[in-house]
Length: 132
Image (cartoon, rainbow, N blue to C red; front, side, top):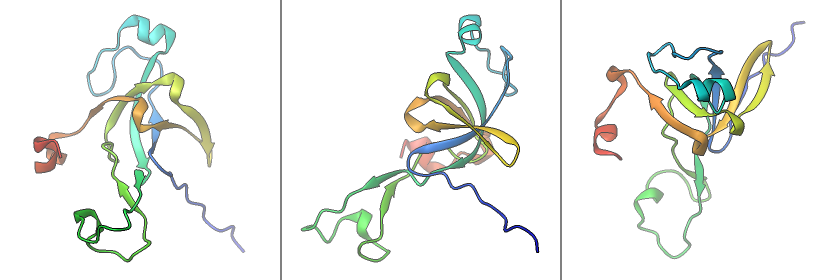
């Protein structure tokens, strides 16, 4: 009998990143300053998974709030993350936690430690343009 397949689930406001190793120019064309590369203050990598976001608590008296539309009472609500699967993220290396899952090396990074995201133009939608 084969071993059951495992799945890595990212929780909260965390982002799972496949790191890019040791170059001063990222694969998307951004140049990192030599001081950042030497001290590893920042690092880049591809976003491979994201958590659901920050949980939002439900006010008890207000039944007509827009965030309550849909879903059942008691179902958790989240403020979604800006990072999306496939984005390239530049983040503070010190905030990252390194893990190995099924032989692959990843970094778990809180969204607050991400400095910038590079997204393919085809993936930009109206909400991105409006800042929503």
